[in-house]
Amino acid sequence: MEKSSIKIIISWILVIIWAGVIFFMSNMDTNESNSKSMKTIDKAIESTLEVTNKTGITDKHPTENKKNQIITKLNIPLRKLAHASEYFIFTLLLIIALINSGINGIKSYLIAILICFLYACTDEYHQTFVIGRTGQFIDVLIDTLGGFIGLILFILKKNIKFFKKSYWKIFIMLI
Image 1 (cartoon, rainbow, N blue to C red):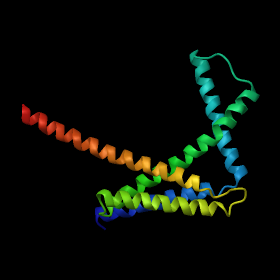
Image 2: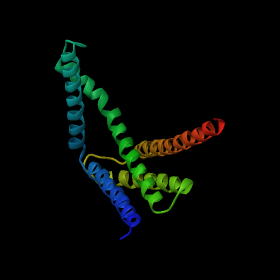
Image 3: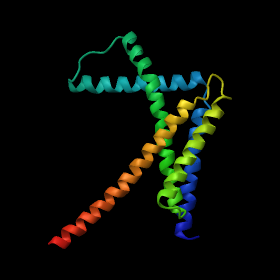
Image 4: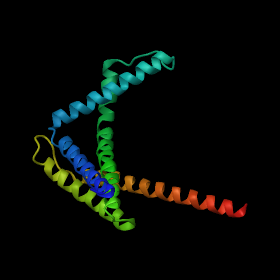
């Protein structure tokens, strides 16, 4: 098998695996999903406090009540950020797989963002069958926004690399 064929297969396998990760995360019922995200926030707060206390930046610990209030306030925005992050990665993997498959430029970008949007739609529909979860179009938009941010950053990285090379060529010509 050619090296490029292996590259194409691996890149699409990564897309499929990541789609599976998204599906798995969406398959958790509300209580399990909420509990995991709140535990993650709690661990992050505890770790931050431990570091800041050890380094002398802080010397206090909030009460459990205050910490729970913070966790509750952070839960929804961080869950939405997690949604966007999943699709950020998904879109980057899609772009890479499409480019490896010979679909380049704006065509690969449009196909990637379309697949991202459609998968977000099916993901939200899937959640209507999961206990305690609902499919919400706002989540589709958040997911697609995450994908769009991934797309923009991919394009910027590609163009910045191009401009650096162009500036270097101009600099050499001037010398």
